Image (tube, rainbow, N blue to C red; front, side, top):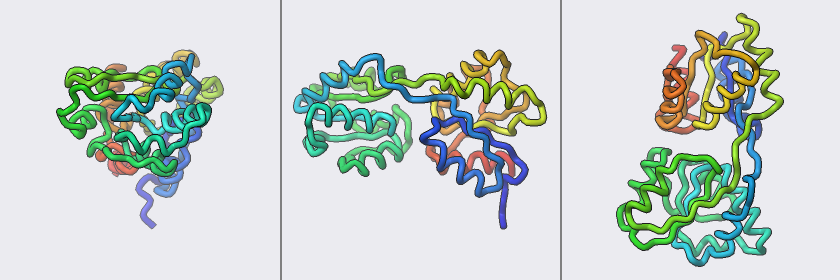
Length: 258
């Protein structure tokens, strides 16, 4: 049996509800997987922007979701407003990433646009330049890059940004990080990051645990945006996924230790 990750310890920092597939695949390849989520999802400070958008869905020609995490809150607020998911059939729907598209399709929503690369810049390319005058609803995290709204506005679109969730540091992870990193023999060989917020909150976890990032811990990134966040934190990624999805991330970890 080919187990390229045998003897390697890999830290998975995904949110707890999303970690299982990545962890299972890494374990199948022989890795000892340590799950310590660096992010948890909370509702936004207010659903006002999302509720307002939901009540005016007929005004929009394009709906964009940049994360699978935005799908459930959007559908929940639609249900709260007694609106059927069928209403979304009247809009063109764009999803950043295969996981986002999958979550939408499983909810019965037709997805019209999925960019080849799972980054905001590729979505702008996929949508094309004929955006002038279009009314666009962008559903995303409370804190996110402004590449998409700024890019669409530059093309003449009218963009409404609605907050569906926010990422926070899981309190339970602080002690787990402290326990893991205070013993040198327990330090993982690599840590995987599937978003910029996971990188940012990982460093917040370390700070709250009173620790510095361990020397020798290698970072594996899901894509260029996450890699850029790692570099901003003075942490050069040891490997980057290509394609920028979970399969690519698993291959990047495997490639790192060949």
